Image 1 (tube, helix red, strand yellow):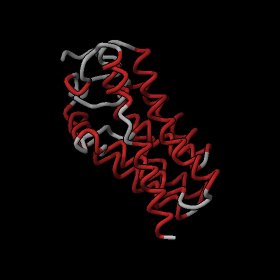
Image 2 (image 1 turned 90 degrees about the vertical axis):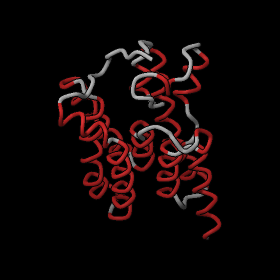
Image 3 (image 1 turned 45 degrees about the vertical axis):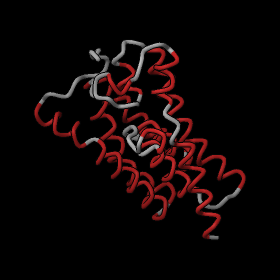
Image 4 (image 1 turned 30 degrees about the vertical axis):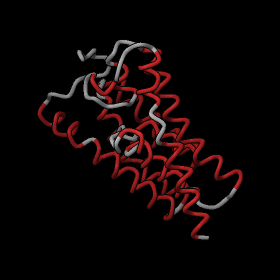
Length: 197
């Protein structure tokens, strides 16, 4: 059983570690996204290049890799779903291909939540969208959504799922530490603000 979980963890990690934001921006001739804005490989930073379609594609693919990491394990193995989800987020945060310097885990985490239970993913996405459209801070939207996620997971899937979601949410908060400090200082850039390389 330990071997099974290790295999699931490796699969989830590899799924999550694909840096779609970096790959798409390079294919589009925009150079290295890590030299733009915050230096992050996620959709919000891709949006700062001014290419909305590329940002949307990054958001979708980053979400899908988390979702499919969980879904495929759920369909074929029926064990280790939570392990696969957590590993996928870790893969996105710390991809071996980029020297373990990845994204902030928001889209991938939301995709994992959808894989755990679609109402959980839907609720978190709705919260993200509401905060994003009203206040226009991507980081604050993520922080609000991932603050609610563990409580929702507890009611929807029980204590074990809630524990996994707590870990994922804690990782997302940890990666957002600079954003939290900028929010406190009133220096956080709003969604759609174009950045110079």
